Amino acid sequence: MGSDSLSILTPSTKPTPLPSQEEDSANPSAALLSFDTDSSPSSSANSPHKPATTIVFISLLLTTCVALSAAVAFAFLFFSSPSGSPHPSSSSFESSARPLKNLHHPVVLLISSDGFRFGYQFKTPTPNIGRLIANGTEADMGLIPVFPTLTFPNHYSIVTGLYPSYHGIINNHFVDPHTGELFTMASHEPKWWLGEPLWETVVNHGFKAATYFWPGSEVNKGSWTCPEKFCKHYNGSVPFEERVDTVLHYFDLPSTEIPVFMTLYFEDPDHQGHQVGPDDPEITKAVARIDGLIGKLIEGLEKRGVFEDVTIIMVGDHGMVGTCDKKLIFLDDLAPWVEIPKDWVQSYTPLLAIRPPPGVEPADVVAKINEGLKSGKVENGQNLRVYLKEELPSRLHYAASDRIPPVIGLIEEGFKVEQKRTNRRECGGAHGYDNAIFSMRTIFIGHGPQFARGRKVPSFENVQIYNLVTSILNIQGAPNNGSLSFPTSVLLPPSP
Ligand SMILES: [Zn+2]
Image (cartoon, rainbow, N blue to C red; front, side):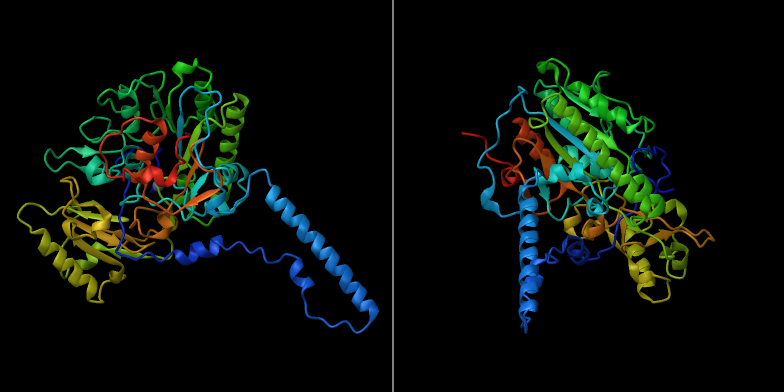
């Protein structure tokens, strides 16, 4: 269906952006995060009973002893856990980066689990991801994707530090307004892919990079030639285990040959999320499987004695939200105000993108659509609002490219836009909405010598990751939309 993970390379995928919904998800996340530990037996020991008899008194005393010892045992287990103290109090962190033991240069392994919505890690035991979190640094309320919250725009923002309007991949599919050419997820011509991705930066500095799938990695650009040895051409049927094994084997190379930057990509759980929505047991299974792959990776790195030396950055590209319940808006319903023919529409949902033909003023189209939507006569009309792209909220950074069509619609979380009414009943999951919507958030975990153990940092946008990686590798990055000071707020300072 609507899967736009790398596995679907057809141009038919519909990405969609979101409405101007304000962030409403502090509550769901708070619920997710409110681990309730006050069931500790010690609370019963403080009960204000007044024992009337010795027997009652003794039994209470016994209860208290049992409760206290249970509490002590609990505390012991809690604080002596090998995964380290999860306490985010800041004073206990290391004061500087840990030295490398077996590698001769920092190595960053960037892992993407497509559609890994923030909170999925609480669905099921994830001991391996949990190990990275407990001994590394985590964005405590998740990683904020760029708008539109789609696979290609986000993966390319992660590796360039640029918003889509600057790196050029403004959607999973779009039309070049000057040439009329169509970009799809299978387009590898360098003209589409602007900016300087990390693999190119790394090679520019005389190091090796290896990509096991990542949007843009097959594009020959600048010094990057997608070398056969270190650049895998996308093939979604390669088993995940094989991908992990291949990456592990890079660490068997002579030390000067080991790529200092590697990518590793998994299509799941995005794949399942589209089919069944974020709350299905299928997702739980997919998350457990990803955790198992992380375990396989950790085990392989430990066997090679480099687990503590390698920097693992685990992210997703975006989250996922359920789209059931007939939450649909039909463009044909707007006909009394303005006709929107199919060939004006470059994408429907969750990013509505319309390019009216020459001679039709985009501002008129916007005014008429919004008039219809606000009339109360269009079903679900209040859940869509269209903008001239220049008038979108500036926090979306979605205007500065000719490739972005002039009329952009933001759709409320979980709603979808279609051209006309059909009998089709669809129930699944989607993403692409406003990046302020909490369900679009994904995960960020950094584990390695320059990440403090057990540290939580505030959520940040994924355009910061480029500078983070170049800082870890100690190389000069290309100009980008991330903040130059960001790495110092997340990484440990170099050891003196
Ligand atoms: Zn997807």
